[in-house]
Image (cartoon, rainbow, N blue to C red; front, side):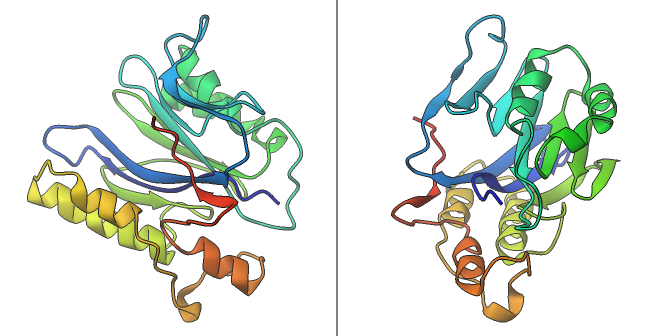
Length: 226
């Protein structure tokens, strides 16, 4: 099982009057894992703007040309295999390529089993696609507010539900002050035991991972936007 990588995302797709796509999220990782900050990648992938995992060479969220964006989370399951290609390569592969979100999702579907469990969001100027391999599924997102953590898309995990609620209110108010989103992302509150998802990890770990902002000494939020 792996618990690092992008772990909390809320997105507004074709909801805001100004921005087609809005993403708010936290990346949780072991602090000792070597990571490069947000930057334009070197050629031939110089159309990619993203942070980079210096161990595997991939990323967790990034932007490309022509309104392209991608974000990946792991799916938490201690019984699932963690072997295979790094999920982070999906970000660079899509953003540095020329396929549309739909075409890339279709092409990846047959090879998705080669990666550890993941959720992948792929956006371009027209569509936003979600693809997962645990369990295998794909869907094109309708306009609206969506949330994703380390389980099914739009699963009502406490921290995901809280962040999507704040993003929904922020979009409805039309306020460009980002502070409400920063506050929600910085919330260290632990969810009540009765509200915790059951992902197969022990209760202390489930509690730790239920916070939007995990501030542990060796593991926690590490967004790398320097």
